[in-house]
Amino acid sequence: MTQQDQAIRQLDFMFRSAGWANDNWDLNITHFDENLNSFMENNLADNLINAVKDIPDLFIGRGTYNLLGGMLGPRTIIGRYCSISRIVFIGGSNHPMHSLSTGSAPRPPRTHQDIPPYTIIGCDVWIGANAIILQGRKIGHGAIIGAGSVVTKDVPPYAIVAGNPAKIINYRFDEETIEGLLETKWWTLPEIAIAQLPHDDIAACINTIRLLRS
Image (cartoon, rainbow, N blue to C red; front, side, top):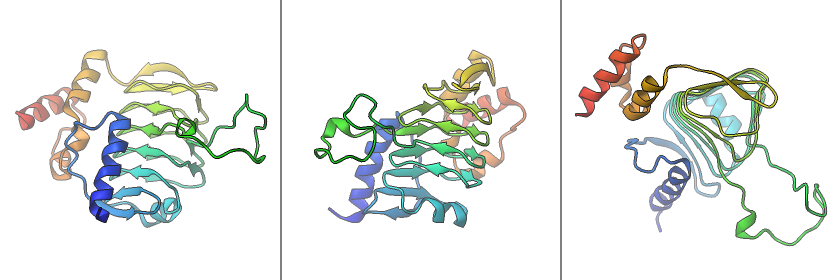
């Protein structure tokens, strides 16, 4: 199996885990570590690349930026155009509370069932400073995580959550608009097309993308 075949196979598995398998992403992978199974798309800042270069089973989409000072755990998938503030912890390992030891005591090798699920951050997600997202949680597209929040449960698309534990306090848009935005999958469009959308008129954005898709 060639390096490219391995990359495609691993990315397909990651995207199926995230529920993105049937989306047309037109990926441009510019950084791939075959030993770690880690992928990053184009136009990422050099400081972000250096910060995550040793993390296994990682995907970061284009346009996502991180102000550093936090931590990304292994088996993490982050979509496109996410804004991640300072000192954010995503997907840190859980400790086995009901096992003999919660720490690093010697134990038998892990089985397949012991492998943790992916932590999934959708596209266009804004994560405030000092937030913590526990391992295995899924953050829907367009969600906002308030500063200092501790996310212990999955977050629906376009929800605004805050607190410890984080709870839904509002949604960015009404239900019909959210359904329209999710239908468009605007983050899969070429960047030149996204740049020409009327960003401040959501209804016009949805209608324009529907015409582009037709």
